[in-house]
Image (cartoon, rainbow, N blue to C red; front, top):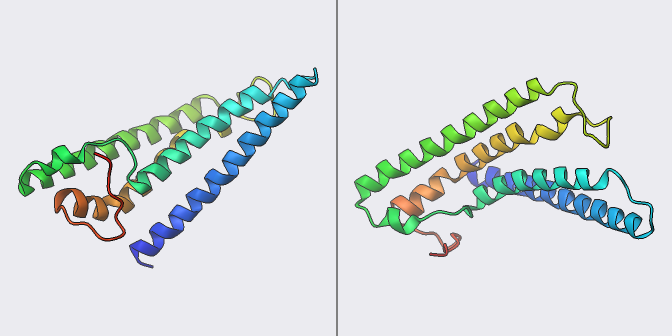
Length: 170
């Protein structure tokens, strides 16, 4: 399997997860509002919706990384000579990977510390499940960043574009 095929499959995987999460979030909020309007408020819906929004944010950030949609200043990188662009590109990737690896590691440590704890309103939902989004999201982000390396290098260091490359907003 080549990188383009893997990227396409990974993108579809993230899209399906994000679609399901958005539908689930909309249904939970709609149910919460409906029950509250009827005078029988659900005690759990706002806590669950908050968790769903956090999960959507982490998975969405991995998708944004895959699409190269995070905030950046490629015009500054492109202003340097190619040798410096190569160095800055490598440094930027090292910083990004270091941050994501630390986030995954400490996210996992948090899971070990909160064993046995549950959501306040749904005592059958463990906090380890809820907080597992931190290391999982970090790993998904690392995968997305890794997939993007050749494309980012071609666009930002070599300053070459394919017809499939989306023009970045500057």
